[in-house]
Amino acid sequence: MRKDNLTWVSEFVLMGLSSDRQIQARLFVLFGAAYLLTLLGNGLIVLVIGLDRQLHLPMYFFLCNLAVLDICYISSWAPQMLAHFLLEKKTISFTRCATQLLFSLALAGTEFLLLAAMAYDRYVAVCDPLRYVVVMGPRRCAALALVSWLVGLANSAVETAVTMRLPTCGHHVLNHVSCETLALVRLACVDITLNQAVIMASSVVVLLLPCFLVSLSYTHIVVAILRIHSTSGRLKAFGTCASHLTVVSMSYGMALVTYMQPSSRASAEKDKVVVLFFAVVTPMLNPLIYSLRNKEMKAALSRVLMRGLSQHFNM
Image 1 (tube, rainbow, N blue to C red):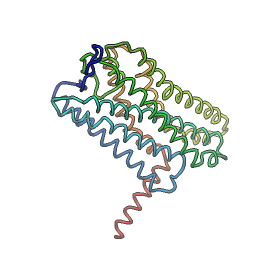
Image 2 (cartoon, rainbow, N blue to C red):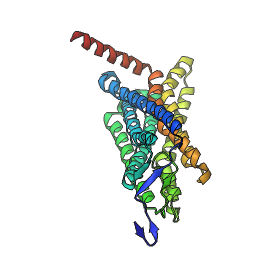
Image 3 (cartoon, helix red, strand yellow):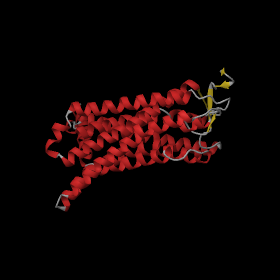
Image 4 (spheres, rainbow, N blue to C red):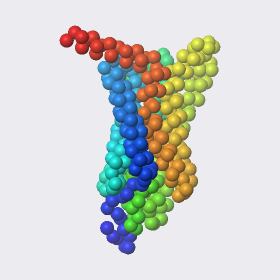
């Protein structure tokens, strides 16, 4: 397409991680295994929470949302990346690229906001335990989750529209494994001041503001824990937050490294590695972190398995 001597391409070529066929085959096995583990781990969390009524609590409501987010997020780009490891022609159409960008940005933004809602849940549980059930009622939990999803989608729609409007003047090779904002902006052949402003505003809305709210919640939590006199009491209170704090550190840390650094061509390769860590490793580890460090989840998993075995043998 042409408009005022500017061109928009109809498809993009994704460079991926390597052009060596043997390395690509190994990467297919590695990332394919990671994708399956992510689906199985997060799917198991959703199943256990759904089947065990003792886990129908605010904390696990948010955890279930997080697990669904991780499944959808990695599924928005992983199948295409895996297919490209096996194909000679690693192209993606303009429409599919825009759709992939829209969903990946929406799901990632929603996850950051949801982690902030989970931090508020932990704040209420530790700092106001007697009113926890009242404060974190079903309506408030649903409202926090809904706002997270809606803000994430709205933010993604704006950023996707501003990014995909950029002409590339025939440049169509993306130095990435998927359609990602920074990689697309690097192809632009016009002024990108507006895009930089939108990326910064987006980072504030779905990254810095939630990060500040998480920090504020945990500041109050730490103060409350330090007021507990017994060591066992402190450990128990901190144990209720340890899993969430671990996930928050990984998720926000990777995103801050990616989007809050000065943009340059030299950082393209590092961006790929950091984005892949956030997009693959974090969703894969989340189920392990929450299940291995959570006695209630392990107990619920045992109950669900025992119930399933009992029904199987009674048939």
